[in-house]
Image (cartoon, rainbow, N blue to C red; front, top):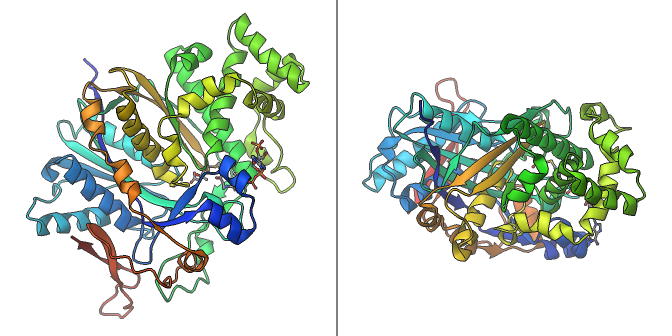
Length: 490
Ligand SMILES: CC(C)(COP(=O)([O-])OP(=O)([O-])OC[C@H]1O[C@@H](n2cnc3c(N)ncnc32)[C@H](O)[C@@H]1OP(=O)([O-])[O-])[C@@H](O)C(=O)NCCC(=O)NCCSC(=O)C[C@@](C)(O)CC(=O)[O-]
């Protein structure tokens, strides 16, 4: 049986307008701007008082339907990937309800009545799992239809925590179908990994107890996390997912890495994907030919490390979950490899092998912070748009995507650029979605962060969903406590 070509035909974005410049934030908080610029980025967005993960998701879906002229009655799968949902029962059906009402009000047909509406949760990987679910749907019972997956999140961290400069908010919707216009997503040639990591980054419900949310009803969703340990988990899990893919495809890791021109990864902040890909490169050198091993040995000698000791460490398969204790959280899983990595980072090869492969869209990403599930698709959207401007992809070219979600799990999925990728990329409109921004000051940031109304922000929404009111009734005859009621502002 011939394998069906299924993948992505379109992408659309929504970002809340409220923007914090990290240089300003450094001045407000006494953090170092040179470090923040190098490690984290330039700015991030904050959700507004009338916004939730559902308003952002539904606005991105409306944009996708409009930009790609989708017939909603053909959409039989609407998946929501998020870790910021505020309803523990309903999920994507909320988004469907909002979009249907706005479509009907505009004289258009609603999304199919027979549409499936799952929500996918696994930290930042929920959107990738949603995309895989949609592809499997299109390959089986949903054949011939279309699917939409929307990834939406609000990444908010407690003030004063190490995660605060990595905040962000936004949503990316993707259209999936057979014979995709943008890129085929090849699940058969993908790799996966998962391992329980206790408390690298979690969101236990206990955090909500005692929150007084009377003013805007927004629940504060600050994670319980251990920054350094979370980066160790990211690196280890992405290495395992890559190994799975190499094995499945009988790839020579270093030859494969050299052959790729573009990589998009989960991006919680600027440095994380660079470090992850660079570690993968060093591991790949270790199983390469004599020249590759000589390159690795050169970095080892400069770092004062015996190459054989590094090779032993690389094959040691450390049990990262055993570092999940207060005494061991700061240990490196691969201490020698990390020391060699710092030498490699300063070498002339680093730009060619690491940074150049992540260049597409990466300047735009400096202004996004962490979008959790939407971080990887946002980078793809920004990257495809830049690739179109610079005519960078060949039809059939392989692009590697690497998703990661704390807790943790990773997915490495190859994309192959479709014949129509240029026309499909021209409709993404990512730069336009970024354009709309309102710079906020320290007081406004403090208010929005605390879930209060911000003084002096008189933004009038247009062509987007807002929360009109939040239910308060807990009567025996009628209950709607905490239910958000939405309006599409046309
Ligand atoms: C990531 C941390 C821990 C960093 O927190 P930190 O306190 O900035 O850490 P640091 O002090 O160790 O500094 C980091 C780097 O800055 C460098 N540095 C120092 N000074 C300068 C300077 N002047 N110029 C240039 N660089 C400078 C310093 O050398 C170091 O580089 P290294 O060599 O170790 O790579 C923090 O941002 C954090 O806690 N973030 C939140 C957690 C996070 O994002 N983890 C990422 C992996 S987990 C993940 O991606 C999943 C997630 C978070 O998205 C959630 C989900 O899946 O749902």
